[in-house]
Image (tube, rainbow, N blue to C red; front, side, top):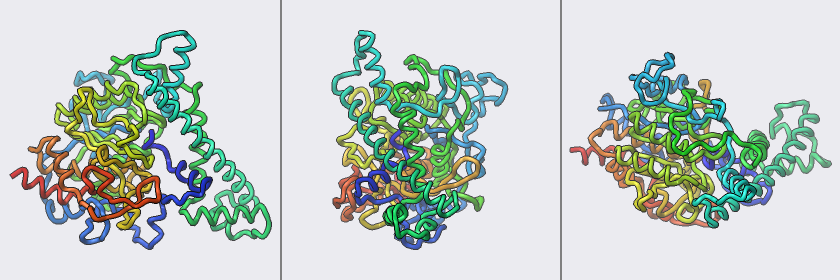
Length: 527
């Protein structure tokens, strides 16, 4: 959930509290060619002075006409994927043991007609789920219900756990209040500017062109200038307005229940609705990994020549349920995934052990798991972020990577202002600020988040692994960490603050993923 929220919260804080936060667009104030912006995550620093992944260099210098030794299957556990997208359809995983459309489980894996993957997000009535509560909302609602019925609290509902749930819930209530303030501002501005300009699709430039000698236009003029200064657009205000509705109607609403709690041993539920009702996030993630590099249109995936995308829908607009995550991981592993991309996360995990068991299963089956660090500008060494690599036996998974987000800048704002970090809990950084990729219905867009950084890293892993299939998942993890572009003498702004820190303090490797270095190191290890 925390990876799926828009940057409305950041914009709200920026305007209502006046904090000098890096906006999601501030880095692009300088004139950068559109073709560079759209492909910056693939670029090489030595030729462009941009800390991309150097994947283009791999294609140009190391691969050239060589074919991959095998296609790497990347399971995208997410909100859904548009499997018919013009830039993705050729690289979708196909379950060759299943006959599509015959309403039979031909391969006897428990899932009917799962040609490209599976959808675990279904209601009690079998309908596709779009919205969900926050986990904190579900936990606190259950606690109230048990108390009301004089029933015993579950073993996992410790005082500390319930206190954390309360803190998360209250923090989001506070965020909602901020969004309500901004939404009120937007409604007033929209009404007045529409009337005075005669345009329903007005822009900030239209607003600034209107006479503003007297209120309310004088106040609106000042507000618009301030927003433009921080790179905020009318579209951002509209996003805040729409996000506010989601918080009040779904995320924090005790009366909203997408479904009753599933039985914890349930597995074979769901359907093959790969896209679901809202697949923007998952399609963007998939495109960063697998968008066709050769067709001359749209985006350029890091590993499009070497990868197949398996779509596993388990992430709603709201917090994912642990049972869905665990089942999604097991589905991916059992159906041949080599890499699992998880661009989601939350601050509470009631059935953490269930997810940990699934992650252990992935480790045992030689599957690399790549997870987004989170978008809260927080230290993951201190604040819980789930899932994470800690297993039930107290050991850390040997095939798990946590990814923070970097930007196109090589200056102090190299680390994306929203990105979580952690000297122990974040392994490395990858491009995740304003990266260009696919959206449903053959569309494209720039999006930001560690949600984007994770699939960029998954793409690098898939690209390297496809040409070095003899390596294990553990070895691939080590290669990716060892081969990063280290920036030991680089100072950056610590996310969530105005303070500068050494970049090396923000992750365990102190580096940014580098496909060229990883490929070269894999060559050495494979010989």
